[in-house]
Amino acid sequence: MKTLKLSLIAAIAASGISVANAQDLASAIKNVEVSGTVVYRYNDYEPSTSTTNYYKLATSLKSKINNDVTFNSRFIAGDGTTDPISLNTSTSADKNIDIQLTEVNFTYTGLANTAITLGKQAISSPFTITRSSIGDEQVGTGIAATTSIGDTTFTAAYFNQTNFATSGNATSLYAGNEGADLIHVGVKTSIAGVNLDAHYADSVDIFDAYTLGLNTSGNISDVKLSAFARYSELDLDDSDKKNSLWKVGVKASTGIYGAFLAYGQTHKDGGVVGLDDGADVGFDEHWRVTLTGISDASTVYASINAQVTEKLNLALKYSDLDAGDNSSSVDQTETYLQASYKMSSNFKGYLRFGELDKDGSETATIGRLNIQYSF
Image (cartoon, rainbow, N blue to C red; front, side, top):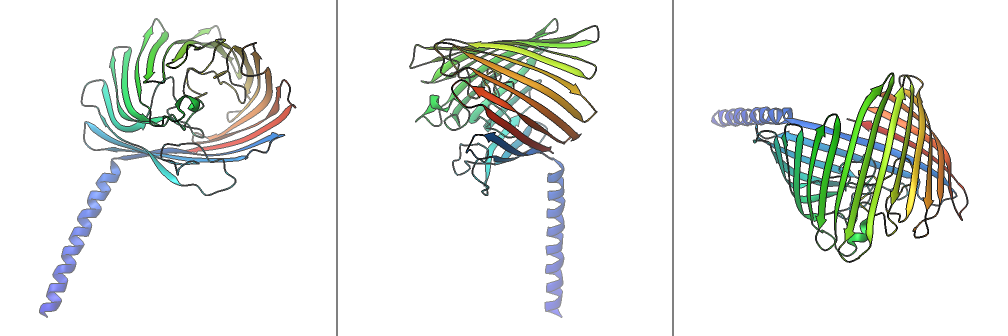
């Protein structure tokens, strides 16, 4: 009987501990926000022998520790996960891919209109890609702070280690210099309906760069208009060559119809002004024709679209790159049709089909299917 009583007491105690732990876990889960994206992409380029299937799963977890501190983390499944600083998508033929912890940091918001993040985090700047559902992301370990005064926001950050050597399309800048640092400062403001920003970045012994940008929007009768302009310059520490890129563009829409027109140009010495073609400082508006990183060249992007139904949008897009005498590329033109379908707010996709023509090369037939689920 004594043994039985002791067993009952132990069981009750264990049960009490289990209930307490369950309650603690439930409370913890209530403070966790989960978000992310899953993308499948299929490319069909003819003639081509490149891999056609791409996958990427990205999940971000945000946990409120107390009223002032939040814990953030991000997990990515993609190619290159054997290398802890590579965030590329999967490009190998139908292989299994590993999961990688790409961000782990703490954000303090105890000061009014201010956020300070410490740890491994996405590098938020016009020179980098902070988030991408299918492509590379630039991350680093360090500290970043933003504070707002009225309509003006100030940003300052220092990263003592980054993934620039393996992420993005300017990796040649960091060949043999993995883990390079970065300093970034910036300011954004709004004056009379015009949004203005200025940013400076410096990577010791690699480059220093700056960019100036503006955008605005308004209506003329029934036509909605939005316009942008940006100038960016990057100077390499070991070269006298100047890299610069400027671009302007305008979007218009009325009823179910929309249009887009943009033009950009690079310096005769070079057009590398950021760490990724898709960064704000770059010019990569459509598909396979990009101005970023190409010297002595200009590009025109033009498109028209129609919102045929609430869920279906049809577009015709055209890109033309004119390479100058000092260009590292050749003249290129691209024309394609795109059908975009948004089944719900968190599930969408598009289908593309067209042609890419480069001087001296056979005209390529290009197609793509892209499906994205967000949660």
